[in-house]
Image (cartoon, rainbow, N blue to C red):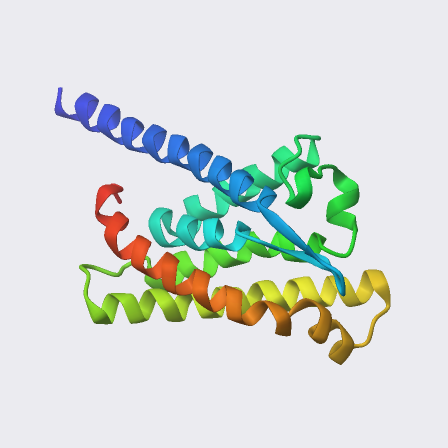
Length: 190
């Protein structure tokens, strides 16, 4: 009997985590469409990275990444979940595609680096924030490399258009996400 109840409990936990993946994919969809276009860059300011930080910090690497893959698949099949209510494979093939794919990297890096983090406090907050900084760097690297490939733009110009202007906003999102993750991590079974 105990084996049956353990497998049922395990199935229930997996089901719970998959539901949370859907919730975080929806959260990313909502946050990403809230965007501000910039006149000097095809990359808009959005809250999508905030959702990716939260997905990795709360769900961990595996399920955080799954949530971001679901988000990208939703946009790929035509649901208008990318910035500016855009959708389709063309968006991923365009200049912003690498940054969107970078959401998966954010969730993985954040989840891996803080996956075994226990408790809260200053130390936990610092680990969360540093993991999010590294996740952001991974997203910047993927996005900028893809942007350079698609637009044939040199590195320094690409950084000036797609990275440097976003650093202050991303820093604010990292602080907010660190605080939220520190509070919400205890509510998700691991």
